[in-house]
Amino acid sequence: FTSTREMNLNTTWILLKNNSRTVFKCASGVVLVGLVALEHNSKSRSLNTKEKVIITSHLNTLGQNLSLLKMEGVCVLHQAISDQGLAACKQMDSFLAASEAKDNKAALKAAKFWESTAGRFHLQSFSPGDSSILAEVEKSWLPLVTAYLPTMGTTSPHRSDIQLLFSLPQSKDQFFHQDNRRQGLTVLIPLVNVTLDNGPTQLLPKSHRLTAGVGEQVTYMDCSIMSSMVEVEGSMRGCVPAGSAVIYDSRTLHRGLANTDVSHSRPVLVFRYDYEDTPPPGHTITSTIGFRLLANILCAVGELKQGFLDLF
Image 1 (spheres, rainbow, N blue to C red):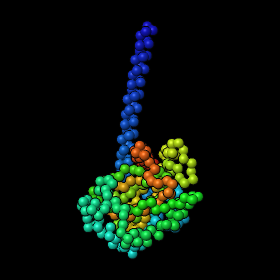
Image 2 (cartoon, rainbow, N blue to C red; image 1 turned 180 degrees about the horizontal axis):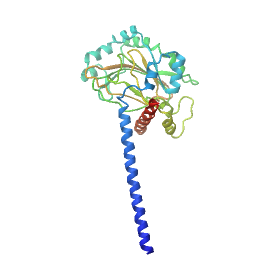
Image 3 (spheres, rainbow, N blue to C red; image 1 turned 90 degrees about the vertical axis):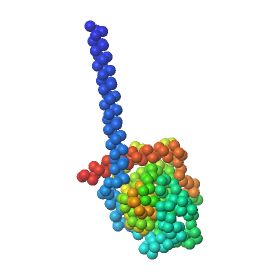
Image 4 (cartoon, rainbow, N blue to C red; image 1 turned 135 degrees about the vertical axis):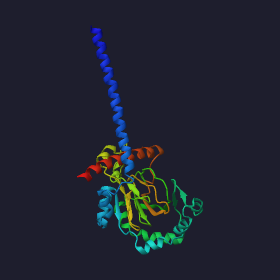
């Protein structure tokens, strides 16, 4: 009798254990599918409340943008380039060469553009005339750069890169990444109006707190995952008019989205500022992959949280 009873108990335990595993696997699968769907939907959904607040805000003073940068890791400097400056940029030799090449990749490469991801072409060397125009338009946001990146002892921030970037029609999504694991600034100035269709930059506000900033202690992990899960909110896509600048901390996770327009490229200017002792990117191949996966999770979690906030 005892033996039969023990056998029944063992059988029941085995069934419960197997059922628990099955339930756990099914639940994990549902959660994974849900997160993937949320991350995918974040690219094409309509602008949410948080995005509209940042993008359409008329709080355009140095102090207000500095506060947004510290808190959110991203701000928008409206009319960073005047209409006259915008017209001058479109007359640059580099811009005209790319416009003439259109989607001819061989012609773009002949004009010294290089391709990073499919359909995304970068130029990093400019003629003296182009350089003069770029130096003039840059004056608009330099006070914000100086305020956000103060001199630390003998180390000062410097312009580490300048690019003209063309995202061709039907170019593909980038993957999420940081421009630098350490604090710096990136300034993106579209030379055409950016819409949800022509490949806006998608950013994860508050993700700049993932890694240590200026004057902060670098921990062994140097990745504040749990606090970022708590703080992260819905993603922001930089749908701004031509001449306005999307400015973000180099640590802010972001990616360029696909240009689904069938006939028009999306040209932007990119200015990068970093400290000499912390040059970009500050990542290994392994950490780049890890942060890419983490960003996808943070994006999905943020979308879920923002969805609930928008309901109330």
